[in-house]
Amino acid sequence: MELECSRDDLMYEQYRMDSKNTSDMNLIFNYFEDVQALSDELAKQLWMVLQRSMVTVRRDPTMLVSVVRIIEREEKIDRRMVDRKKQTGFIPPGRPKRWKDKMFEVLEGTVSTRIEGTQAVTREADKMWLVRLLEITRKYVLDDLIVVKNLMVQCFPPHYNTFNRFFGLYHNAVSCRVKELAFEDLEANEIVSMLTWVLNTYKSEEMMGHPELLSECDINQLEPLLPQEVVDDLLSKYVQTFTSNITGWLRKALETDKKDWQKETEPEADQDGYYQTTLPAIVFQMFEQNLQVAAQIDGDFKEQVLKLCLKQMNTFLIRYREEAVVYKEEHLRDRQLPQCYVQYMIAIINNCQTFNESIKSLKKKYSQSSEPTVSDTAIGRTLNEVAKEGCQFLLDEVFLDLENHLNELLTRKWLAGSHAVDTICVTVEDYFNDFNKIKKPFNQEMTSEALRRVVVEYIKAVMQKRITFKNADERREGADRMIKEADQFKFLFRKLAAGEDTDRLCGAITATAEVFKLTDPALLFLEVTTLVSKYPDIREEHIQALLAVRGDASREMRQMIIGTLSENKVSYAGVTQPIFKDITVPTITMTTMTTMTSMATAKLLK
Picture 1 (tube, rainbow, N blue to C red):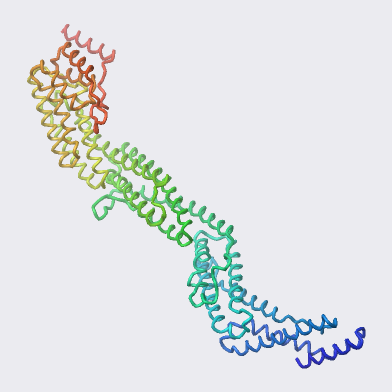
Picture 2: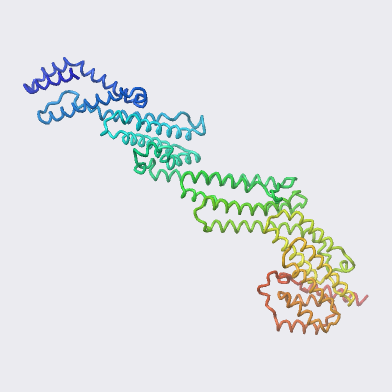
């Protein structure tokens, strides 16, 4: 510095005496040529110390203090030389050196290099490369800023505002780095890691909001690490990838479940003994994992992913319903296969209940709103349809086995002592031993529906006029048999807990039997009126069929009964379980009449 000052003073004096004498000025400059080289060498040493300032300040803070003092001295000389230039027009060569500006450039470069140098591995070498990179960055930044606060601030003059300056340098360096990373071809899980770190970890106590730093800075004044449009693009990319992935996952899960339906072993049962498959658990484990991830980013995005999950769930359940129908149709082609059709159909029904409970659980855990959405309503409707159809398929299975026995009812064979109803009761009870593995409320609804169908099939047998009683003895015998069989059904379905309608439904068979049992035709109108009052959904054609089966009602009697009932129709609106409403009475076609006439003619000729 002394040599440099000597040179500058000589050049200044020369300039004052003869400012145009460049040869003497060059002579002085060349004489002091090595001074400039010495200054440059000193500068290199200064920058080297500053580049290693994080290490230097720990090992030898006095070295860093010396560097700052040298730079401060040079700054003062710079200011003096600039001021003199304003007055005289002369400034020595190399001035102003601006070493203070250079110092901050070096420190900024040092911080950037430190942040950029954190990537140790690539995706090819380690799938968790980004998580590791972000964690290393977090640790470096936090450690460095604590060193700045506790050690480096003391090495710089107070007016440098050292901590805030470094805080800004690190923020800018991290922002540049994450912007570079954001424009790489990130996978879905990497996008989540990135956004979770940027939006949450960065300002948390784990990093810039660390308690040891809070007294020195205001993290709320920091600009976002990533522009909002970049965040939105990343979220959009994640949603697209997630949608594609979840569609594939759900398809694969259903295909796996369908393979289980073909097994020769029964499905697993839960702790309460209800059949189930692993499908609901697999599906909701997928949803849960992705919602946990989305929740790490922010609440709005979590809601968005939940809505997406529910939308995908609705589409999936429509497919689930279709596959259950296909399963039933394939079984009907060969009822021996699959061996555990009934058990797996029960599991499908129970899965609907599990799906419903899991959806409620997810909404409670991850949604801010308790209000039902369009997706909720659609999902609930589809689940209910799948379960009810499954119950219907199982009842169809039961009634396929009962078909021959139901066809025996109200026939001559039945009147002679058929065991059709005994077999029907045994078969129904046997099936319902399996149906006990169906969860509520569907098992209750199914039992009630089974009772209704049995009663409807029984009364349908009456309406089909398979038999016409020949005399009072046959009417009494048939009626007693009907009453006995109604009691059998009542006993069975009470045992199966069919519900409060059991007596009323079975009573329809008993009330019909009373019409047949009546010995005095003159009281027939009263008996029929009693039947109609109990079961107002009965129609004229039903009464006609009953009187035809009874076999002794004259044409005038039938017309009188029908006519009177028509004038005093009873409304059946509001009847909870209509019985006669859906029972059709076969009509006598021209072909049937011709056949009957031919048979009657042949009988007469014979």
